[in-house]
Image (cartoon, rainbow, N blue to C red; front, side, top):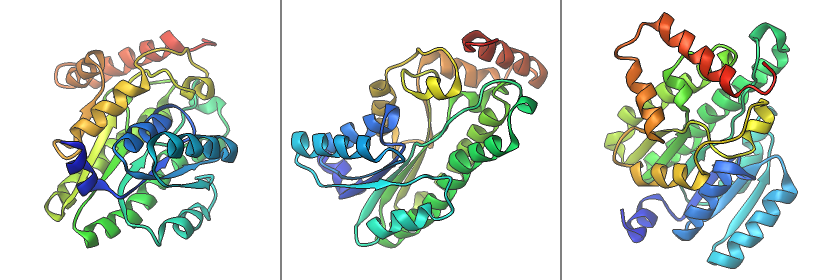
Length: 262
């Protein structure tokens, strides 16, 4: 899709959660390069404001900063206070995190927080902005899933399950909205060089965020699922040939391989 066509379909404003670093920050840069105005959502206000200034200076776009915590019950109210007057054409549900280790060793409050950020927040945002996009007759939603959605992963038990939710939610919503002018994509990266590993307590490595974002923007409107990286595409095909029990053993080995404290 040419830049002018992308802007016509998904502009003039895009909202990106988890915008302060990693894949979310890269989405901001690439969307700004396409001249979309941006609403940046994350907890770290100073980082958002610094990024917003850079984006405006380099690309001449407008920005809005929303320092919202997606765990808070009023996060949607904070976002709507900024976005309601604006014409939002693209939603990128990027915010998310993982807890690494034995499920029973984690506090239940932390596991619930993971569900709120990884699943509840994208659900709520997709409902609000999806309705607006249907009324305007065009738009797009990108939900960040993961290669772990294709492989049961002990020691990432709740995280991988949350990414299955993101995948299935996106595929179902893609079918419901495809005739209403709204495109939906589940973008499934594997290991990516971001701050994600610091929070998860895993080794850093993998693809560059730019590669992941480029794929997502390229595939939006063309298919419901995009898997970044050949090795991750292979993982998705393994579901067709291996038993669930074997896949779970493979998933455990994968997570153990990049755990810092095994």
